[in-house]
Image (cartoon, rainbow, N blue to C red; front, side):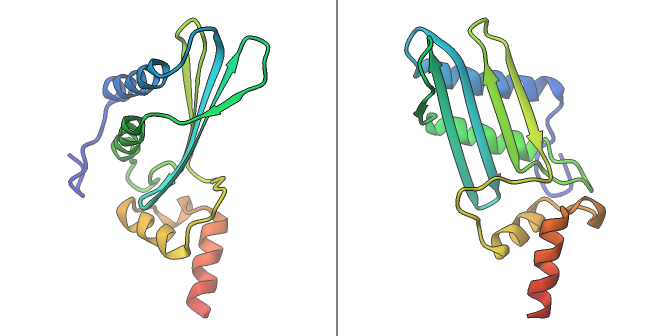
Length: 149
């Protein structure tokens, strides 16, 4: 257990959750897909996701991941929290027809369609503390400007 009461996940538990995420997504897809891309951007109180599925040689189709996927993503993010570095804000998860998958995480950049409030970002920093050197420059600037207002 981490100090805050959250459970740290080791590499095996992380892999297990990633496999669960992929399985839940694939369970709602039809046959013939060529690539699946699931992108999620989140902080403690806000989440945006995007599911794109490429079938054959057609353009990517948009979809929605099952709700259980969001729960797994939040559990994964919390369990991957690193003291001083914080928790990631974004994950790109790609699945190929062979069953191989790749997950990439972003700790600094966020790509929200609708930007959460500064208060929501501050709440996230309280839930997942970071040393100042690991607070992204754009967020540090917003916090400083809000303090001057």
